[in-house]
Length: 425
Ligand SMILES: *Cc1c(COP(=O)(O)O)cnc(C)c1O
Image (cartoon, rainbow, N blue to C red; front, side, top):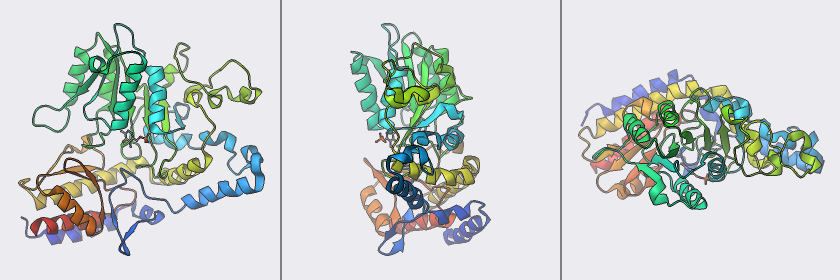
């Protein structure tokens, strides 16, 4: 074990004082444990509350109180057009055109809506390739969609596992599997950043491989949006969905989002579920019989917009606009790299734990998934007791997400210090 571990505190402090994004931390509330500010590393599960969120929601409550139904047209942010106010910021985060993104519903609902349109099985082409161990809700969505089409998930769902003894997938293995199934493949869909391992998949290469095989490519961005920059438009991704309560800090159950590439906007054969909010805007209130979808991804909207939840999303997106995802990523690479470095200093031979997340920074976001080899639950309890809010996943993984928007290098050092102390006891 390194003898000069404590000297890294000075390094952390220097990195903090040089950090061009350090001011953003002050824009958030931090939960307290026993009266002390916690070390919050669960922005991958529920992002912190921006201080401005209350103001944004209160403005809508005031408009509702003062204007009633007139708020739809005459509110500060007229409710009728609320889905438009987040477009520019969301488009920047995922690398899309504003017409290709929309805030609506919840993640799993949006996944179903997208699968209805973009999973179009035929007798010949019906298989779906995804990563093994995908988030439960995504697995349920795939299986239930297959059953809607009377297709047996066991025959159609191909779940790619890492090579023996490894924790992450090689891009070339994904490409190979896609190519090998090209006769029968309908869809490739991955969690862009895997929720459990933290692996950031190569969106571009997976999409190219899918298209080459005659299939479509979709991504679940739950752990990617607000975490890593993306270029969905340029990469020709067909569709994507996300939630906004993780790195986007839009609050519990916050309104989610979806992306559809403009390549699909003119396709009249796409099936979709319809509702009045997706109907051509100019005629929406004429209550006509025939559904005419709005241009762009907006045509996938079903219901009117959840304004209170949307206000919280806007409060957070204002911060992302100021911070910029590219700069956040630069800090994130340093911050997570620092965490990895300290953890390897503590346990160089990986006797106590093993980091499951790829060590290539290009293949991960901010999260590190630490597999504990023994007494994992106990260690987790102890670090929680010491003021750390992290996340435990069976069978023994502690997920730690230092978020560049509000976590500091000193916090990362303190976390490592606590782990070191608990391991040496
Ligand atoms: C967080 C998360 C979900 C949650 O789904 P909701 O519909 O928002 O409840 C689904 N899939 C993935 C990959 C997630 O990370």
